[in-house]
Image (cartoon, rainbow, N blue to C red; front, side):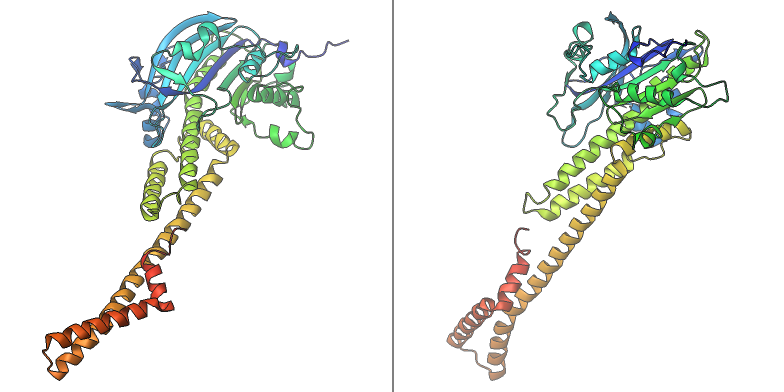
Length: 427
C-alpha cells in the first residue's frame, strides 16, 4: 500500500531560501555598502549595474538610487539560529512627504529545517499545542540587528504590517510528489498549488481552509514562470515552488533562487512602495477639508499625485515578463490600480470644486464693485452734469451713496455677492 504524501509542514526542501521584509524608521544614513545585496552565481554578480538593466530607468532610480543620492544599502552577515542562517541584510529608503524616515529592512536567510513552520511562526500562527513559537528572536531579532540604524515600525503605524512580509523559495526532492510534475511535459497536480498557497499565505489547511467555491480562483492566480517553477503573491507573503526534483549543485534552481532574491524581490518591493504612497495620498484626500485653504491643499495634493505618478507608478517595470506579472499580482492583491483610479477621480472632483469657488469669488468681486461703484458713480455724475462744485453737496452725495450701497448689500442679491466673495463658506 502506497504511503500518503507528507504534509508540507513536515517537509524540508532540497533548497530553501527565505527573505523577510520589515518596515522600519531610519535613524541615520547607514555606513553599509551602497546598492542592493550583490548575490553571486558563478561569474554573475547581481549588483546595481546588473539589476538596473532589467528595469525601466524610473523604477531603477526608486529601487537603487542614483550616484550621490543612494536609496539602498547592504551588509553581509553570518548568523545561525534555530535552523535559520542569516546571510545578508539590506535597507531601502522609502521616504514619503509625511514619513521622511520610512524604510524597509530586507533580511536574507537560508533555512535548514521545515520551511512552512518558519513562515507560520513569522505570521504569528499558533503551533499544534496552541502556542506561538517565535522565530525572529535572539540574534535574529530585526530590532537588535539594526540597533542604532533603524527602529522596527510598531504595528499601529500607518505603514506598519501586522507581521513582516515573507518571500519563500522551496524546491522539492524526488519524494515530494505533491509538488512534482508527471514528467517534463506532464500536468501539474492540484496539490502543487496547495503547497504554493500554504507557503505564500503562511498557513496550513487547519489555519485557513480554502472555500471549495473559491479555491480554483485563488489557486489560479499562480504565476507560471516556467515548467520548472511557479510563484504566488498574496497580501502578506509570496512564495516560489519548484515542480521537479532539485538535483543539487549546478541545477537551474540555483539561478531561480538568485532571481527570487533579486529581480523578483525588487518587483515586490516596488509594489510595496506604490502601496505606501497610495496609502499616504488616501490620507491626504481624507483631510483635504480640515483647513479653509482648500485651493492650497488641493494644489499640494495634485503636485503629490503628479510626483507619485512620474516616480513610482509603473505597471510595466521591465521587459522581462515574470517580474511584471509578480508586480501586477501584488497590485491586484492590494487593489492598487483601482485605488489610484479613485484617488485621481476624487482629486479631479476637488479641483473642479476649487475652480467653481474661484469663479464664484471672481463673480462676487465684480458684483461688489458694481454695488459699490454704481451709486457713487451715479451721484458724482449728477453733480458733474449740474456743474455743482459744492463740498457739502459732494458729502451729501457720498452719504447717499453709502446708504444706497448698504441697502443693496442687505438685499438677497447683495448677501449672495458677499457670500460668493467669501467662497461660500467652509464646506
